[in-house]
Length: 128
Image 1 (cartoon, rainbow, N blue to C red):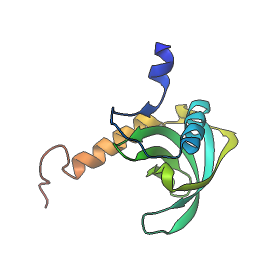
Image 2: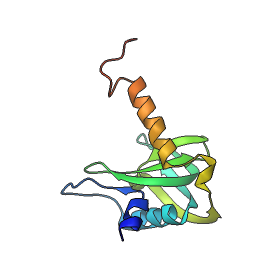
Image 3: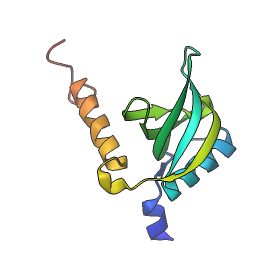
């Protein structure tokens, strides 16, 4: 069981409440586990919708909201999506190979780089 736990890209700190559609979370966990691409409609905070194909990499829980770490085919870049804003989620038959460098480790490295550049971990930005 321990090897399966370490290979599961699901991160949930111990918080008392969670809000996310369990059906979507189950489908996303399956897509991550099986390395399958997904297709969905996504609504931004302002209500603007778009259709996306993405490579799901990991799920994160931030106390009250879940976030999907993914490679977005539309933007050709790493993106974070909230599962509660996803509609018409479909697991595609297409699988992916993480050996191409598009993976959770690279996503996290990019996020850490952006956080440092924005001064979120290394103190105030020097160019501000």
